[in-house]
Picture 1 (spheres, rainbow, N blue to C red):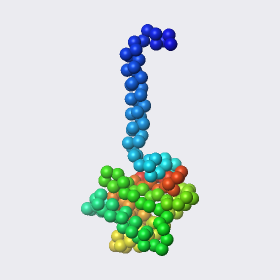
Picture 2 (cartoon, rainbow, N blue to C red; picture 1 turned 60 degrees about the vertical axis):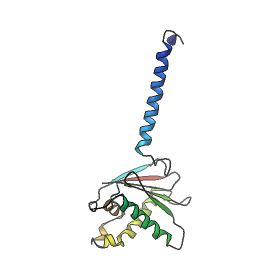
Picture 3 (cartoon, rainbow, N blue to C red; picture 1 turned 120 degrees about the vertical axis):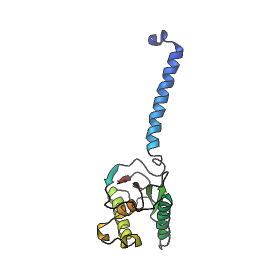
Picture 4 (cartoon, rainbow, N blue to C red; picture 1 turned 180 degrees about the vertical axis):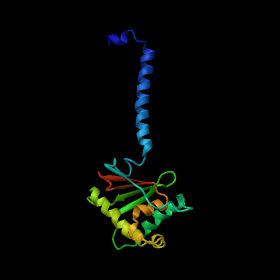
Length: 168
C-alpha cells in the first residue's frame, strides 16, 4: 500500500482501465480469429494443411458453397437411417465447412474423423463433378472442397475432439 500512497488515484484508475482493456483486447482477438470455436466445436487438437492439385472452379461463389452443403445434406436425409453428422457452410463468404457428429461416442478420435473424411472421398468420387474430370481415383474430398472454394474444414465429434484442415 505504501507504493500507492503517493500514487495519484486518477493515474491508478487509468492504469487499471488500461490493463482491463488489454486483457479484453487479447480475448477479443482470439475469439475474432475463429468465432465458431466454442459454439460448433472445441479447440482443435490437430491441424493440417492440404495442398489441392486443382484450382477453384470459375464462377463459384458463396451461393455455390451453400448449395453444395445443402445438396449433401439432402442426400443424407434420403438414407434409411438418421444422419451421423451435420454440415454447415460458415464464414462471411461461406468459405469454411464445419462437420459435426450427431451422436455421442461417434467420431471421437482423430482416426474416426479421418475415416469419415475417407468415406466422404468415396462419395465425392462418384459425384457428377468428379466424373467429368477423369482420374478420380487420385482425387479426394479435400480436392472437391477446394474446387468449390472452401478454404477451411473443421470436423468434430461435437464434444471434445476437433480437427482443422486448411485447404490451399
